[in-house]
Length: 233
Image (cartoon, rainbow, N blue to C red; front, side, top):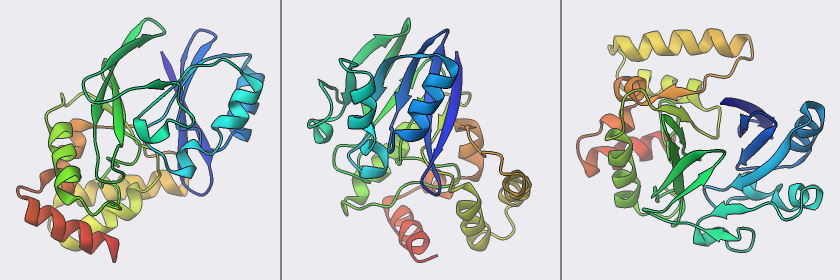
């Protein structure tokens, strides 16, 4: 199984999961790069997965479907205008011979979901390397609960987040914990990658448990303080 990033907007990643000539597209915020890649690589679109209903994650769906009609689209209730397979917490389905488990990871949006297949996690904006999404709903408890679900995943699970925010997240973490050597080492590595325009993703859960202050927050109150500080960073 190959997972390929398509860059979109200023810092989005649209992930393509490939098995032979078949491909699943996750969160196509725009269509141009996706369609070009599918044509260049002579791939056949099997399904589209959506994590939440923000335009930079769903804005390209209609144009993709115009070229690949009848492609199934999986997503949470909040994407019902685009998705014809509504999935939620505890659901599972099979694509490309693999089982995808769905779990709710709300907070960034009310109905945000993530997909886990074997040791691969597509988490949209619920989890980033070194960070997590803004809590636009104001429901910090929901976002904190989502982070605890991520904390319970196996350390080897690969984290395919939807934005290239790692450098800024780690700069923030370093400002909060300047003596944290693991954060400093991670920031140094990430800065080198970004100088070369190399993606910092995927990360993995084990690494995030060491460097992600939001995952390490022991109480809701600590998480709220961190998230609000990051909002203003």
